[in-house]
Amino acid sequence: MSVPPIKAPEVKGWCPGAHRPMKSGDGLIVRVRPRWGQLTPAQTIGLCDISQSFGNGTIDLTNRANLQLRGINDADHHAVLGALLDLDLLDETPELETRRNIICAPLRTQTGLTTQLAQELTDRLDELPDLPAKFGFAIDADGPPQITAAPADVRIESGPNGLIVRADGSSLGQPVTPNTAIDALLTIVRWFTETRQDGIWRMAPHLVAVPLPHYFARETTFPCAPTLVPARYPHGQVFGAPFGSLPAADLRALSLRNPTATLTVTPWRMFLLNGEIDATDTSFITGPNDPALLIDACPGAPACTPSHIETRALAKHLTAHLNGKSLHISGCAKGCAQPRRADVVLVGQPEGFDLVLNGCSWDEPVLRGLTLQSVINELGRI
Ligand code: SF4
Image 1: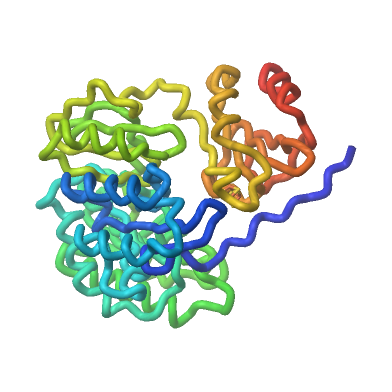
Image 2 (image 1 turned 120 degrees about the vertical axis):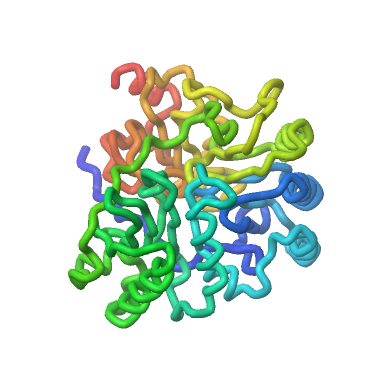
């Protein structure tokens, strides 16, 4: 049977925030952007309270190191904003919320260069020109870069010869000092806005059409450090959660047992609790070999309207059949849970499951219309 090609999904140039939530099948999605991805213990517990009082009782981790509340009624949105304001988790305006699109390397200290530069960029956000909503920044200045694959358009990183500012899509950056890094970042952003063509929203596709001036591309960066896994690190304990979904009751219990620990969100659907952590008696993943870490699954039906399948129930069912392969289960071809390739991808369709091998949810399937049993049979053959 010949399979017609599937088009890559349209990426909307808009991200939900707290001020501008997105409507979904189970209510509003309210995205919370903790400053530089960090929550104090009081903020962590306060966010759990909001999720349990107004949402569906879970908090989702996003690949931009943000947090998401789901299942909020329209009528409760105002109360949720008030509660976020009390926790100092709300930007003054929707414009500021959109602009403060900064991901920081999770393994950092409160006094290190990453933190200092993130503070300076936050203080100077009003110097940025108007930018597309998804345009963002990665600050990764304390040793070998940790977040080169996290979504960002301009990056501040360490290289063998010192600090660089690098446009995403270029392997080379501009050498800078801690005192000149934010000025250099602003200069590259202005170059982007002055040379950008209609319909281009991100730096990497822009560089395909418009060569980066040599001045901005002179120094190499370090290779990316290995991605964090659930384990104990000198900074604290990294925890994983199936599908990046944190049960608020479990997070509250963990936070109460570690009352001085700051929580740092990572872009890999894991979080770090800083310090000497009691990681016993928790539902979160604390070691690197848990098979749940191999699976990405979006919320699926009934939470998300376009979904044709209950993704997460299916994921739990298929865990025993993975044999070490990575699996992405997507309620539709958009692929929200995993923008990168997985060994096996199942996409929900009205007539069954589409199967993609070593690809993304929008790639051409090798088989279509599979039943659950035929999916299990295929997993045994792959
Ligand atoms: S991929 Fe999943 S979460 Fe994204 S739109 Fe489709 S069903 Fe919804």
